[in-house]
Amino acid sequence: MSNKRLLSIFQSGVLGLVPPISSVRSCSGCKMAKFTSLPFPTSTYVSTSLFELVHSNIWGPAPTPSSSGFLYYVSFIDDFSRYTWVYLLKHRSEISVAYQAFTAMILTQFGARIKTFISDCAKEYLSSTMRSIMSSHGTIFQQSCPHS
Image 1: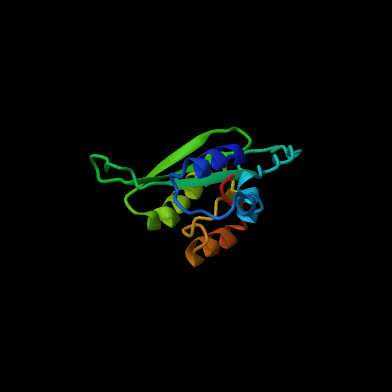
Image 2: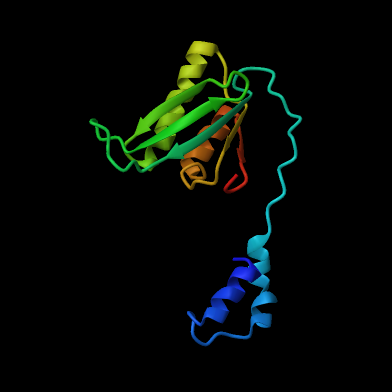
């Protein structure tokens, strides 16, 4: 809240007894809350081939399950083509099964493997099962910045 708004609330007496207004102005938490984050630098990286970089995210639970009982989905986005594949999941723990199905499909259909895989910090991506699947395929795993 701005200092002007805080002052008007304090002066109205709605809050009852409050500390002197000067102590509120010097509150480090208030100052930190008003900071804005700096923009991310523009990336100079450009993918040059299919599946050089694949982004992924898991979403759910849905407020209402699908008619088949699916509550989650995982998306895989190829950075080069921007083509997106979506796999429906009944449980978040099924991410490794969806990832294996996706990698098998691109190997069969495109003769390619994922070089670099990037996702958020969801614990399903960090599991030992996912790590071992990726390392067995020679895929480099990267994490994006939280809340970006």
